[in-house]
Image (tube, rainbow, N blue to C red; front, side, top):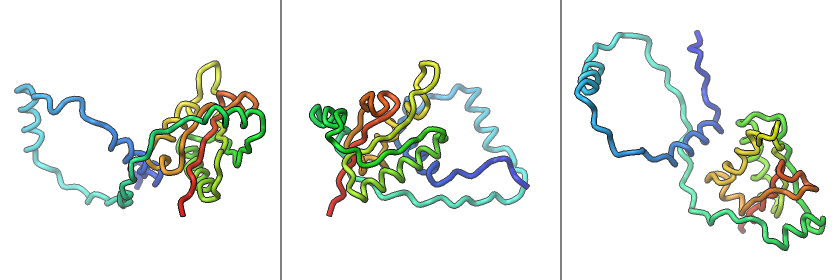
Length: 180
């Protein structure tokens, strides 16, 4: 019998862990009013009804802490000009059109790991511009993802692509060189 809740994928658990580590409470602790305190005590002392044993969910162990990475930097003016003129090679391209956020996140991480492993220097990530003048979800999300710890070890920086390569609907991403 299904409870109607689905289990989170590995990528979703990693993303959730990353998000929850980055948040801070708005205030230390707000004092409870007397009525709220009484309700909390009553709720805590309420007898527990016997039910089926709770299911245990296997959660992946947390990833080892990553060293703090340098801030993301845009392309240099010289490199941007060379890429726009076709003198600088784009080592790989990834088109995220038609993917959901979770699919796009996983595909981007796989793509950047692969590019990093192949010693790619510059890649193009196509997000799409969005519809009706509004930026699309992936257009807004991909730059935020590139700042997350799981991407920081792979990425030096990024910026909007030249019009010839998709303009605002694509990003040039500088890939960090593999060490050793």
